[in-house]
Length: 258
Image (cartoon, rainbow, N blue to C red; front, side, top):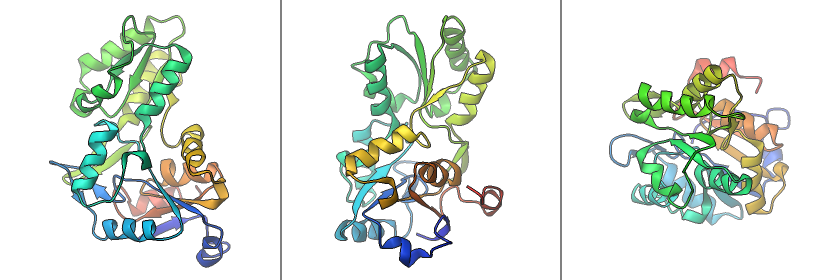
């Protein structure tokens, strides 16, 4: 993993590393690039995961992946050569389902077909909220307008976005992410979406709780300077950006103060 940016410049990496007890890795753009089939593992990433697992550090994987259920997603990672189990991976959909149950909400779903099975046990009749994820080809005018119609018809509209990324990298280039469509619905309905996933502090805290560690004891490694690195730093964690995935030099300069 080629490191580009972190908040460790003031004290230096060796000094900061002494306090580390855990590492959280992003997945897409850090360990692999998505694309046709299972995508492609990034060179050296499987070996890096193996070394981390052999160390004394706790390791978790935090992702905004919403094109497959957690089980199918982890199966893909295993086929790419990664020693990763379902319990180590934290995507937004299970967290969203917990919120729905807690608040008694019934969602209209604008998500990828591969994610629908995750919501099988959720009541979706007479929806009183909308959940939007990385729907890819399902982001049609018809589907976006249906989500808009549900929201605009509610007395107190609630929009959940599974992440808020601008774009991500696949093997054939950059792709628009859910944040673009989230902003369109926010503007059309004059509301503010509730983000479930990175960079939500609640989402990061759920991973820290599972590790049993304090924020200053954990390092987040990702390819997104705003949602991975910036989100982690705002929670008190250390953050590092890799030069793979969606990394672009111009973006790093623009957000160098994150």
